[in-house]
Amino acid sequence: MSRLDFTPYRRSTVGFDRLFDLLESQARSNSGDNYPPFNIARSGEDNYRITLAVAGFRPEDIDITAQQNLLTVQGKKRDEVEDGSELLHIGIANRGFERRFELADYVRVENADLADGLLVIDLVREVPEAMKPKKIAVNGAPTLTAVPDTSADKASDAA
Image 1: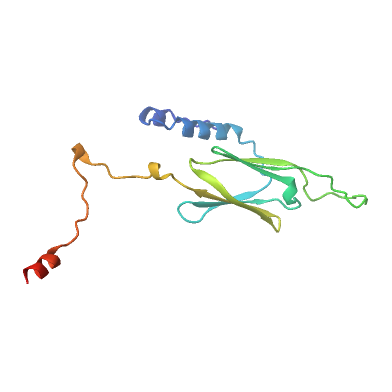
Image 2: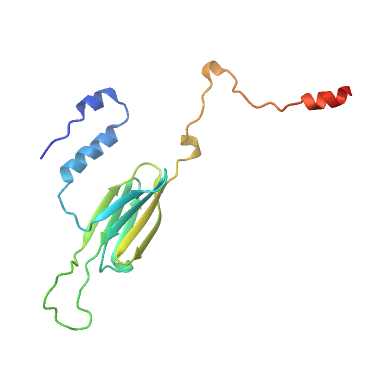
């Protein structure tokens, strides 16, 4: 297992401790379990979509929990035989699962939909107005504002 060393970056950055800790913990906990397979797509600057292949699961078998910076998707295993028949071969995976996705600040779940064996979770990043970039005046100088053109009014007054 390779160890990630972020020491050079930790020395020259401030406030990124959570990010480095997250990357190191992901490298340690990557157990290799790839079930269920998933895709992550970005459509637009602030819109994301996670698609999980959950064939055989019904909406009531899936639990989606969104906490601050963490999205957890759980699938609960259920009994396969519902009509009283005896299964001779089980080739369709029907095991429970848990997938965790670390979310950036201000990312929230907008929608979740299950159709054709695919669970689609739409995410959107909504940065609060107070957190958006703004221009700062240097030395308290007043900011420039647009002044309406009054030259047409003066010309009509002179006539």
